[in-house]
Amino acid sequence: MAAEGGGKEMNEIKTQFTTREGVYKLLTHSEYSRPNRVPFNSQGSNPVKVSFVNVNDQSGNGDRICFNVGRELYFYIYKGVRKAADLSKPIDKRIYKGTQPTCHDFNHLTATAESVSLLVGFSAGQVQLIDPIKKETSKLFNEERLIDKSRVTCVKWVPGSESLFLVSHASGNMYLYNVEHTCGTTAPHYQLLKQGENFSVHTCKSKSTRNPLLKWTVGEGALNEFAFSPDGKFLACVSQDGFLRVFNFDAVELHGTMKSYFGGLLCVCWSPDGKYIVAGGEDDLVTVWSFLDCRVIARGHGHKSWVSVVAFDHYTTSVEESDPMEFSGSDEDFQDQMIHFGRDRANSTQSRLSKRNSTDSRPVSVTYRFGSVGQDTQLCLWDLTEDILFPHLPLSRTRTHTNVMNATSPPAGATIITNTSSNTTNGNNSGANTPGINSLSTTLPRSNSLPHSASSGGGIGSGIMDSAIATGVSKFATLSLHDRKERHHEKDHKRNHSMGHISSKSSDKLNLLTKTKTDPAKTLGTLLCPRMEDVPLLEPLICKKIAHERLTVLIFLEDCLVTACQEGFICTWARPGKVGLLSSQNQASSPSGTVV
Image 1 (cartoon, rainbow, N blue to C red):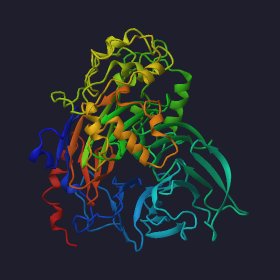
Image 2 (image 1 turned 90 degrees about the vertical axis):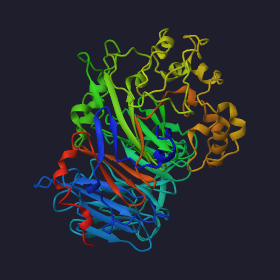
Image 3 (image 1 turned 45 degrees about the horizontal axis):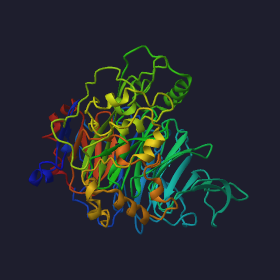
Image 4 (image 1 turned 180 degrees about the horizontal axis):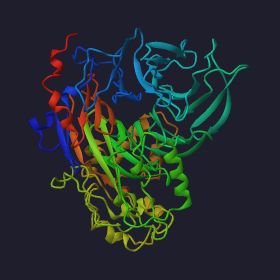
């Protein structure tokens, strides 16, 4: 891991890294930033965010990029791995006074070479609809801040809609808007539509239809981010109270919840097939949650500070079919929805993702790739493999995916996973406690999960119920510093506070600091928030320091992946085999000669 080696090497910024696919390389000539290329003084500023859209340009160069830096918003042609960035010619540039852009989203459904619809959220609560190609500002929503006065944290078009969009705020509220409707000249009056556990939804009461159409109040504190499922039917929200809440968006019903280990959750994303959700936040962890089982199936520890972005790589997620597949009806229905909404996804991979053979309940060989970036300036890549997804089943084939770090020792804070994790994580209703589990857990490949301890769970019989294990077994520790918790429990979570210093007492105390109605002492050790030893702990495939300032963007594209840091630099990393496209232009297109 990046922590190993120490000293000079730790502070060195990486320009390439290697995975099983090959070498990813930073393309310095494809760096986007403000035209003067001066690092932005980011103190007190909102995170740099990046949005992409393809306008189906006939020239074959249809990608467009939008990013915010401080009070400024830029819109460029994105040349990716093909050509060097020309920062002297933004298609559109805007500088705002009195407020800053915080987030933005393109409508992919309506985008053409002549017109795009871009939503921009602001720190004072407004949302602007602009067309950076026509250089028009068509509408401003919440202009008088009568709907919400707090910062906009996330804005997204509703999938499949040309006019509906959803906006979340630091107030913990979410609002559904229609671009065709006005916001009115008075504060809206609301009528309760539906209420549930820690959430409520109101409709707007007025004689004529006006915005907002709906007001969602979710959890306690800021609603930091939300993401629609690939089929557009479900909505995952992460909040400062540490909860992931997943809703059926149209039915306005709560599908499931999960609680962070401690602190707020900051980011969330869906797997390409909609079966898994990954969330990250102030506990320095990435947490993998099963949509179908509504439970945590794994946690990943690699970051040394808050995780700011998580994203699945649709292009590296792989499926190998070992047998002719017979699918259950529910899976087929699910997949039909997926294919319908998967316009810009890697359909060949997605259409076969994570299928199960209904005759012998054996999974196909599947690997989900996802990535994360954090305030520790590090990029981590993770593989979610079948030994984690289906821990109670024999592997369908000999696994060939290996961790590039298999020669290194695991980090100090994560050395043991007991056999109880095998029993508790396979909480599916059938076949969860088979006699073969204990022997299987000792032979699981280490490719991406830490080794299970062979000696620590010997006294646990295979017939014990999962719930009994979860409540009764508390002496197994995953953290090497667990026995020193008395010395650490008074410490609060600092910016660079590592997982290695977390103890159950300190996390309980920190949880109490968050203003939530849920007692953290009651959630730890339950399905909402399993203890560290109760679920597999993933190691990152790679963990590299790639910036000087905290990272705020991670986007996977077909030829590359894109990262951005708070200094305002947007970096393009060519995928293996894609780096040669730029080499011939490197000399001629050097941006150092750009006149500003």
